[in-house]
Length: 393
Image (tube, rainbow, N blue to C red; front, side, top):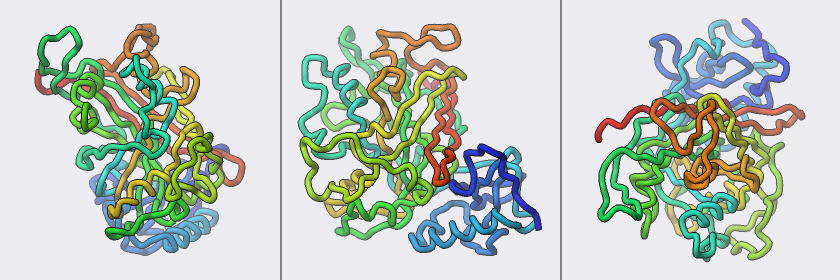
């Protein structure tokens, strides 16, 4: 038997215990939990073959009561001794996509982001469209292009047209961007015609990840009217390898900043709101350029899930939905380079160079943390991606 050392100030203490999928050497992927600077092999530690799977889906499908019981058992184990061979240094494992993604939906839940984009895209109109404060606006993305952190991002190609162009042209995106978001993972699904209420959110959503919704703004601007994003978004969405349990985020729960005028329709009302006090940091080629605050979001993840299922749509184990870009009221809190550079008109300084959108070879890293139950902070790890040149001109 052995013990796990948790360094003082670690973002991965017993109040966090995020789940992921890892492998060692050429071994098969399996489920583990991050504890300090170590990964605990749950199949070896708990003797349960559900954790020998290559994704979290079989465990998540067992439901809320099982999530609670396993979390308590892990807390007991890591506070004492665990079997020899069940602990691996985090630096010596390979991390994989933690879930089999069923469906992917991305929302647009930040009033600050939506207002900024409205001013940029529709300068002569009201920034928010009439429906925005009545429902969580979203679009359906591609689950097959959800990638684990560290996967390189190939610059997408597509149609684009500037006001100066007589006709659209085809080629690599010249306005490649990021969107700093949180993603939420459905663990316990529901059949058709079974809406999930906001108060049922923690019984259905297993946990949260960092999410980067890579965006080709020039392709998006030409295609998005009238049906919204398609090729400008569908080429890649990156998520962090660690899934922080919703059970670990109770201490980060806070009221939402608005929603009194107008009052949401009854199906979107929460008895205790699921606003979350989570801070993100965006680094561009190693320079910090933004600190998006999730606590400023207008719509909560519980309301997003309620809206997603209110029409009778089913939900499935492994469904992933993103919050949309997280932006605050200050410039340094904007979660997309479109906003930070104000459509390319106000360049940022990155490594001593003026920059607006991503160039080949650029790397973006997003990290995040939240208050923990014991007064410490808990971490989400990181979502990292490097841009490679387009494969076709």
